[in-house]
Length: 146
Image (cartoon, rainbow, N blue to C red):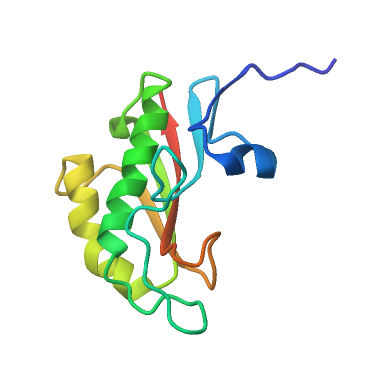
């Protein structure tokens, strides 16, 4: 006998949710799965976009901290839809264009947002060759337990 999972979803109302066809967050039982988040505002505009060089690639990674901080803020908004906070996060994966630039700021940004010198979160930092938007430097997925 096949049973259907009871899924609750949350979205942020940005265009690519419908274009790509997905939910920003899905809760099944006591687990919240958050899709890759980036540093967009409520209108879908990238916050702190990286300047691009003539070839269309990031010319600088100086906005990494600002992008990272806003990416966490979007996750906080989604978690709140389920009555959760970053305290409920047990695992995160950061996908970045430049591992050195991310590592340089990640400790401070993560400690600030998690409110702890050593957040109780399993964390992965993975370098990738490309993200969804040329000016995007980082994308983060989260798993939380409530």
